[in-house]
Amino acid sequence: VCLGLFLSMIDSSIVATSLYTIGTELDTLASVNWVALAYTLAYLGCAVAFARASDVVGRRNAFVAAYVLFFACSLACGCAQNLRQLIAFRSLQGIGGSGMSTQSSCSWSYMLTMRRPLFSYHDHSTRKVP
Image (cartoon, rainbow, N blue to C red; front, side, top):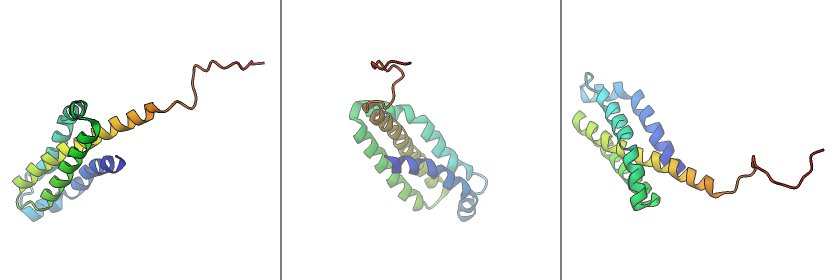
């Protein structure tokens, strides 16, 4: 769960720092910003949809699907031959990253609420206060 959250968070910052190099390699500096924008738009647009999908198919299945989609599209981004392919794969990768981030947050909140709190504000013990 932590690895998926880490990968989805660090992915956008890694690509943002290498946009100039990507633009010079593909000879399209004018529209290279769409590489980062496609990921961000897909990431933000699919967060609620993935949260709802986890209610239908289960948290584990939704997380595994998001992880596989993110990993497969990361490989596809590395094999992209032109900017259009890279933008398409980055948008699909953003959907997977959104699912990993959403499911990590849901899983952490579920795991933390299962445990009894260490300290309680409403402690009804029988201690007498002097």
